[in-house]
Length: 271
Image (cartoon, rainbow, N blue to C red):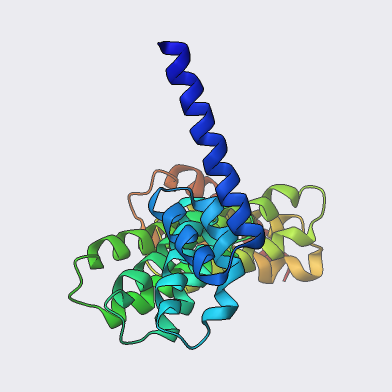
């Protein structure tokens, strides 16, 4: 009985596959559309996408295209083609501004880019797209049930960009031992981080590493430029102390300040 049941299953599977291939390759548009919908509802999204690609041109300007475009976007999402899903959901909201699914599509467009967004160290293009899409969604639907989720995902993406900016600035500092020009690049990168992401969680550590970069840069500078850079480093210490008087980095920061002040006194004696 088990063998018979298995054989029947295999036969049905082959017939089903054969029917799908026949409709895909030679079927009329209406049959392809029905099969695409059938595959979509059966969660066979790859097969559905193949058929939707075939039938879409024939439904230009017809009512069915609204449903087709939504199913194409959803199929890409369900097959983890998140960047494409984000694009198609966004296009759906623009093509069908009066659709009852517009809000859902707007959220899913942003969420698709969120899912596509890589780790912080890689190209952030999808991260930027997701943040922009979530912001547009929140502006358009402030009373949406999805607003809290959109805000949460937006903050996660922002943190990712902050971390990327912080790690880049810190890398400049760490590699300055091989190329002194990177001290200046590090200082600029930390300044950009602090101005672009006000209230960043990396502020304390960024101010500390900015001080370290300014301190090392000053002490390794030529005599002609050392005095001005020492003054800049002292200002960096004051900024850290003003913002985080109880910082865990203040011990090391005060040691750097003492070194800078000693160097300043030496300049004062010479002048």
